[in-house]
Length: 69
Image 1: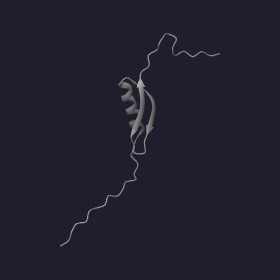
Image 2 (image 1 turned 45 degrees about the vertical axis):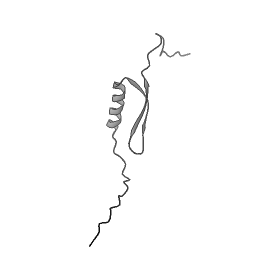
Image 3 (image 1 turned 120 degrees about the horizontal axis):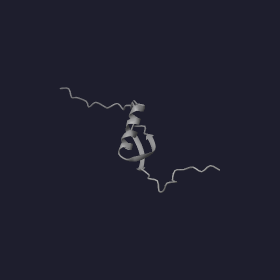
Image 4 (image 1 turned 90 degrees about the vertical axis):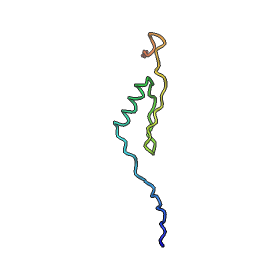
């Protein structure tokens, strides 16, 4: 009587296929949620990590102006 031997899984070294459109789609989703994107990181496993924060509202009418000297 023959016994079945368990198959060993072969580790996959294939990198995930991310396209620039995937990253743009993720960023647009974050912005649509009302958050500001501070940085984007792609992990070796193919995950997209986006650092966010609340959308900043100007404190006064001069906020955001750059003074050149």
